[in-house]
Length: 209
Image 1: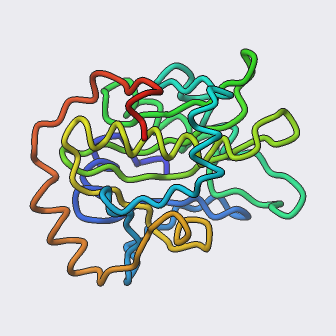
Image 2 (image 1 turned 45 degrees about the horizontal axis):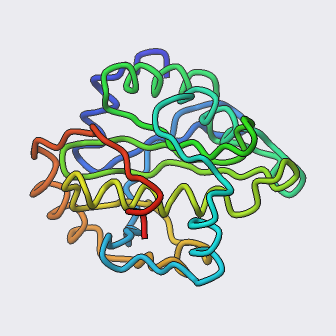
């Protein structure tokens, strides 16, 4: 872990690998799962209840305003999730990628309080979603889902082709995520990672759905 720098991390992502810190030892472990979970950008499923929440304007959704705060919220433990794979060293490392414009956050705010969001790595025409969070106890029910809807709208608008979400979960499957063979994912990664795609701009609430 001490020898890992942003260049090595980015090179690993370019080959399909991503790191997680072991929650007990802190040792860095690398993953390149087979199958790989992706969310096709044209197949996002937004239930009507979630669509209403998006359109209601309950949350103000921004990008790249509080990257470290989002990462730390994703790392927080809570009842039912007593361990985390995001440690201070990873927060520092991804923060350096963020400073280079290669890692981005989405923030969901309610009454000026950060109540949800997500972050990930942006490599050309590929976005690798790393983690998301919501704080229902602060009025953030569905804030992570709303953040994902906003993210997908943005990725579509700037020309990103692949949204990698790494591992399947019931939550992601309900929103349209699918598993594909690792070789298929890697072919797509290689085809799109070198595209020039700028993160600039951000959707308005009227253009999200």
